[in-house]
Image (tube, rainbow, N blue to C red; front, top):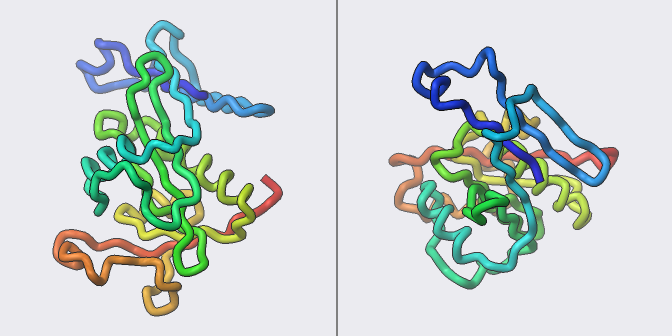
Length: 193
């Protein structure tokens, strides 16, 4: 689990957090990562765990603009689903789904609740999904990214569509090249992490 320290009411009002800092702690079995700190009383704990319940994830994905139809049944080829939730309330904060498409490992979905955008949850969830893919033996991971700049910060590379495996469903989507301009991206996974 990890915690994100939220700004105090005064910081939200004046739009600053420079003096207080933000606290982002990721607790792994061996490693704890801390970025700055705030008093614990304003922190919210989040945990990332595997889930079998696709329905709440599908609602979040749809709410965040991903082409997902709400369903209780995970899409064909789903290998695992990750749920990031507020440890106190159980509220779904972020989610990710890994699938196998055309013989390739694909990060099919990753979304963060709108009120938590920029909180670091997406980065932590992405790292967790990459770890899970490595555990399944993936040497590379693919995705179709609506926000390629986010993934590029974590060493994902854009691959020309004509050089990518057939993992994208974009060409049949009515939003493609109208109001959606995704990139096919790939990341080589190292096993020394």
